[in-house]
Length: 401
Image (cartoon, rainbow, N blue to C red; front, side, top):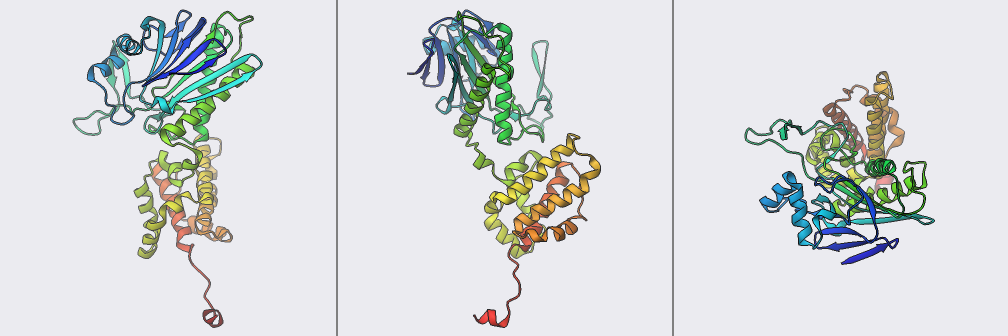
């Protein structure tokens, strides 16, 4: 089914598990396609993104899976033939993301049009550049580097991919095409940072996933080819805005990853190893049995309270600043006690008690390692929750009123 025609130069189609761009006029394509259609090409007629399996469980035939991983030309041949496309004229992107959750964003300036078509999933495979590697390629073979979780099982990287197709209405020089990839990648990372998406392989914020792919197509033959796709150029601005918005939209559709969903103490702490049950139990350890039961019944509301989320977010950010060396380590005690007291005050709804909470938390262990950091936050939340429903004693007159 044809979805749109852009700048009288390309048609966008969706058919079952594929979205493809059909070039009506010659385009220059730069892609991460692993088959012989990848790299920088001026002789392609199609760029497509194909869903090869389910996001969870990854059901697909063993032969097709093997081809997708180890024989990309064969995989391209099978997928292209299924949809009536000439394989030698196609650049291929593959993913487990649903093509019906694709997001399209168009940005224009004068006669310059930029269209971003993104699919994405980050819940299990989000990573930060520089995270520990899962494997090493040597001699044409994959050597797994991650230690086994069980004697008979070697873990592999989780699945989840952000794929970007980018269409540009004017000719772009070869060097500027590479620069456009940089700009598009920064835009994707900016979207993930705004969502506080956690890496699943370290305690850092995600910059992408381990399997992200991109394909850029710029029309050939227009006067005065564009030579700059960086952030100072209008082309770079349009790329940044289109990719950013399309990534945000597709992650909301595919994963339900929205600012509202991320407004949660648990979501902020997941990258440090927090889980729902462990965080609840860590808080309950400092509460009476009665208050523990009350917490369990209202835990979601506690985690989603905006002021509590804000206080935890502040301390998480300051923890990052300490780890990155922006704040000196000698300030750790004052930072932890002050902002821990803010967490307690938010949980209690009693901000006049901040000085008292500071004094109480001053005796806690304060280190930047993940277990100690999570324990401190749990203690601060418990301190506040323990006072949330304390009331002044009623006088005799008030009791009978």
